[in-house]
Amino acid sequence: MEIKLLMRKMDEALGRAQTILDKVVGENRDMTEEEKTSYAAEKKDADRLEVQIKEAQEIERQRAGIPKDQPKVTVQRGDLQPVQDPNIGMVGKEIQQYSLVRAIRAAANRDWNGAGLEKEASDTVAKKLGKDPQSFFVPYDWLSASERDLLTEKRDLTIGVAAQGGYLKATDLLVQNFIELLRNKMVIQNAGAWVLTGLVGDIAIPRQSGGATSYWVAESGAPTESDQTLEQVALNPKTVGAYTDISRKLLLQSSIDVEAFVRNDLAAALALAIDYASLHGSGASNQPKGVQNQTGVAIVDIATDGGDPTWAHIINLETEIAQDNADVGALVYITNAKVRGKLKQTEKATNTAQFVWGELGNTPVNGYRALVNNQVLSNLTKGTGTLLSAIFFGNWRDLIIGQWGTLDILVDPYTGGASGTVRVIAFQDVDVAVRHGESFSMVVDAVTT
Image (cartoon, rainbow, N blue to C red):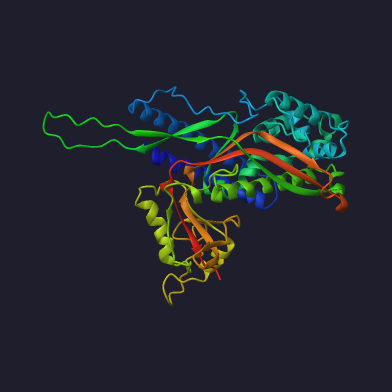
C-alpha cells in the first residue's frame, strides 16, 4: 500500500480520536466507557498504521541505498545532556498521589514537609538530567501517565481507606494526562502536526529533496542511473516559558477540581506559546522557525497594501500546494477570528448568498477543515496597509513539534504578592521543523475591517 495512503488513513484515525477528546474536554467531563473503547481503538489503529508507514519508509531507504544506521545530528545544547529514558520509574499509585498544586504550594512557601513525594520526584529528575530546576521538576511519568495504567492502578486502591486511596476517589477527573491535555489545546496539533514527546537528544528526520529520473529506452537498453537526493531536518531544543497566576487561597485547596484547573491553565499557556512559534516563530533570538519564515512556503498576495480576502484567494492557497504535488495528508486552513468573521460575510460570487466560510460542519472552507487560533497575527503590515491578518493552508502532518525532557516549574510568590497571587512559570524545551515548505501556503495581507 502506498505510503501516502497509509498516512491518510492514519490521519483519519487520529482525527477521529481527536474528535472524541475535543468533545470530552469541551464538555469538561470524563470519557464514557463507549468513548474510552472508541478512543483506544482509533489510537491502536493509528499506531498500527504508523508501524506500516515506518516499514514502508525503511524499504524506500534500502532501495535508495541509505544505511539503516546513518548517523544523526548530534549537536548538544549547553547544559542539556541526553539521557536514555525521561521516566524515573514512578508506579501507578505514586502517579495518582502526585499533586501539582501541592508541589506549587510547597515551592511558594519554601516548605516541602507536606510534599515529600513531589520533592523526591523532582530531586530524582534533577539527578537524571544533571541540572537543577528553577523551583521543581514535574516527573515525566506523571506528565505522560497512560489512561490504561491509571485505570488499572485504580482497581488496586481501596476507596474507603484514605492511606490506600480514599482521598483519590475523584481521580476520574484526571484520567487525561498532561501531555494529551497540552496536545488537545494546541490548534496546530489539532490540525494534524506531528508531536514528538519525551525526546532526550537532538534528532534529525530524513526528507527526500529530489527524486529519481525515469528514461525511455530501446529494446535491451538500460536506463541511465539516477539517485534520489536526501536531506535531514534537524530539531534541537529551545526553551519556552509560559506562566499563569494562581491565587494563594486557591492553592490552599486540595480538591481534584483545583488540581485539574491549575493543570488546565498551564497547558493552555504552553499551548499558546507553541502554537505561535509554530506559525510565526522567527528562527532567531532562541525561537523556533515557524511556517511563515520557512523556505519554500508559497505566498498568495492580495494587493500592494493588502486587501479583502476573496474566494479566489482561498482557492489559490490550495492551488499553490497542489501544483507541487503536496495536496495530501492533513490539509487544513488556520486563521484568526477576524478573518473568519470577514469570510462569513464574503460571498463566493455576487448575489449568490454562498459565503467563503460556509456552514458545512467540519469542512467549512473549500471543502476542508478550518481552525481558528488568535495566535495567528492580525497586526501585519504591507506597503501602507496595517492591521493585516494571515491565513495559512497546508498539510500539517509535515509540521513536526519536538518536546524534550519534562516541565521545569518556577514558582514566583513575589510578583503578585500584593494582590495575593502566585505566578507559576512552566519551562519546556521545544523545537519546530517543517519537512517540506511546499506543503504550506499563506496569505499575510488580509484586510478584515
